[in-house]
Every structure is written in C-alpha cells, then in structure tokens.
Image 1: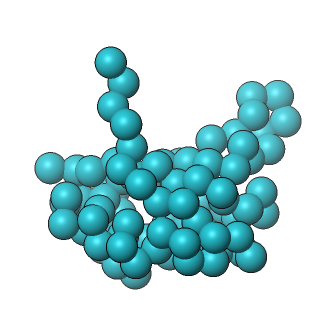
Image 2: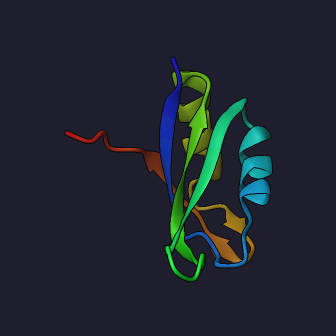
Image 3: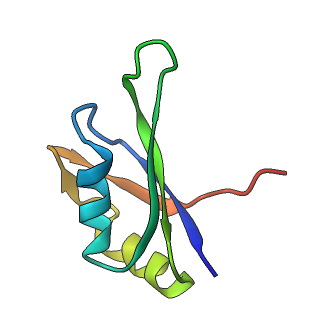
Length: 83
C-alpha cells in the first residue's frame, strides 16, 4: 500500500525532479508534488512524496528528515489524512 509523506521547508528553487531524485535514493517513489501558488506558480515551500510501501516511507523519514536539499533542511513526516 502506498504511503504519502509531507515534505516541508523545501527551497523555492527545488524542482519536483530534484525532490523525487532525493527520495528515490531510499525507495521507490510513486508520485512527487511541490505545492505552488495558483497565479504565480511559485513554490509554497512544501509538498508531498508518495512511496510504494510503509517501510520505504519510514526509511525516507529516518534518512531524509533534517537533510539539506538546496541549502535547506527538509522536514519529512507522515502526511495527515483529510477527514
């Protein structure tokens, strides 16, 4: 079952491809999405990465939480589900 992660403190210069590459080093990435402002398409500094398994998601949290990407330490956590 796929597991979605919340990624915070993303540099405004980071692309979805760069983010996906960083996460693919710890497991298989299903999807990667950096949230952008509607009008300007500028990054809001957070996004979501979906991993193929719970184990890969946990490994991504352990390995990448606090790791620098484009000069900023990432905040990686389990994404909260919508009610």
